Length: 534
Image 1 (cartoon, one colour):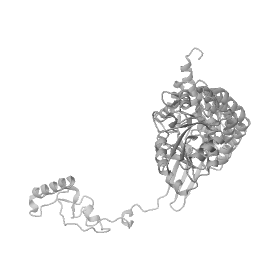
Image 2 (cartoon, rainbow, N blue to C red; image 1 turned 45 degrees about the horizontal axis):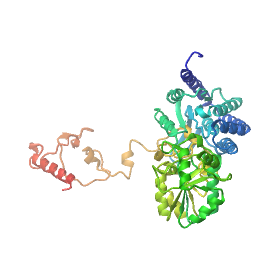
Image 3 (cartoon, rainbow, N blue to C red; image 1 turned 180 degrees about the vertical axis):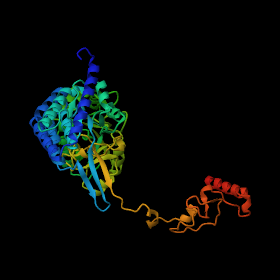
Image 4 (tube, one colour; image 1 turned 30 degrees about the vertical axis):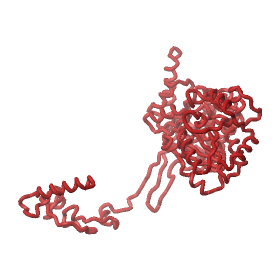
């Protein structure tokens, strides 16, 4: 092995992880609810004990986010998630319908591949391990190369915690050699039955192209609309708290603020009061220059960074207590880079006349992160209903996007994989839970007599004799028809009735002549003219 090239060794490691993981998946599939719960409880305990350590490692290795916030995310991925899923029925009979004599039975998927992003490297591992095991699956992780150490540490802690509580070995695996070849091997290995992809658009697309079931999430670009009836101070507080939470690394975080002309001054004043810094045109150009590469692709150096760090990098002076940088925008798309996703403490800023314009603008902004999340601050329920039609899987009302979208401040499932629906190219539109990681088998009893089903159905109206040509077959509901005779006998029961099987109508002028060609020609011409609309 030592003489093998690194990429070949990484591929071999991926194959070994799949082989061992498949065996562990077979074993865990036979575990009881009590055994699974014992494993999860121990994983929660270990995750909480190491929450701060893992957060510190993630910040030091990637440079993204804040230790305190990442610590809370590790807490959310363990304790909060466990409290949400602990009573979830994920094995045996999970649903019964005694009226229709049906019930559903849950089966595990098998071995799952989890792709881990550098923005949430430890919380994602804890979260995906928990939901996989709750559904009695094994999981193998592919870390982002820039977060290999902290991701591997989180995976090892979760794996050991599971084994200590009675889980089979190799239930949770993780690549230690990050190469595209190894990740590709995991994606295409026959032992892997499902892929959960959280990462960049390229990785998500590759997961969906692997030829097997995948759950992937697209980019977010959430507009936050502060409507005229909103509590401005509370709305601004929510936005600032959300955008500065782990320095904007959650894809559900706000990306743009939309205000109306009538509340513009109040919103701007409140934003400034809460530490927001409005960039002038020259400063905005400098920030965009360091923030983006090749148009609107974010420079990784400034992902998950504080407003002050970004400003310093752009060579502009801002107060030390600056919370976010805000850049006024006059449009959406090319030439307006702040109209795209920015996983850091920078926001675009738009002014509209009314909710109709806000609606239009939101639709345009969401095209750059379609299907993910939208944020709305209002006291008008009618406006909420209007915006419910927007192409976003999570429409959050009067809360922060980062916390609301991940289920930390809303009733949504606590999750770090947020489906974008078919709008965003995702197979699911919900926050992903253990229920997305099971197969549902349906057991159903016959409730109708198949031998008399047609005649017993009072909603089925058809002249059976006209259809079959069989006089012995009683009509259910006769349909008036022109008398017709046919050229061959009944094929079903041998009676004297003529069968329509040949569709050869005898001429009304002379039955011995067979088809009346003139009548047939007239019928065809009439049909052609009708199709032409003549």
